[in-house]
Image: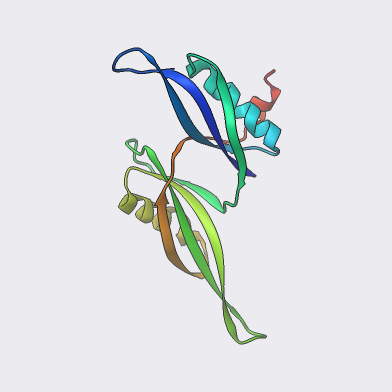
Amino acid sequence: MYFLCKISTEKLSQQDGIAHPVNETYLVDALTFAEAETRVLTEQTPFASGGIEVVTCQKVKLTGLVNTQNEAADKWYKVKVMFVNYDEEKQKEKRIANYFYVHAASLPEALKTLQEEEMKNWQTDYDIVAVTDTPIMDVYLYSPDTQNKK
């Protein structure tokens, strides 16, 4: 499962060296809300100059994550893809919404990456119906190594 966790903390500004309050959003691959909150706090505590608090943590409906090969990629885009299936019994077309988060440097690159890296593996018709920029700063994927650290 994936969770969107929003934190509130203070971080030192690179321009003036003064601590400023910030709100940041992270996508966390975890099994429970508690695990997601713990992971984001563990990952972000070294970068906080003051206290740190998880303001919100919510489940995200997500079909997959797609990374670009571009090292300049610094944004995560949420892409809504409608898969088109035909129901033989009812003689109707059925559209199923799926969501992908795509790491890319720009919106056109996000669409290209999604189509070239992910959609080529699907054997169904689809329509890309929405692409939105997200506030996600980073993604913390599940790893057994992170679960063994105490």
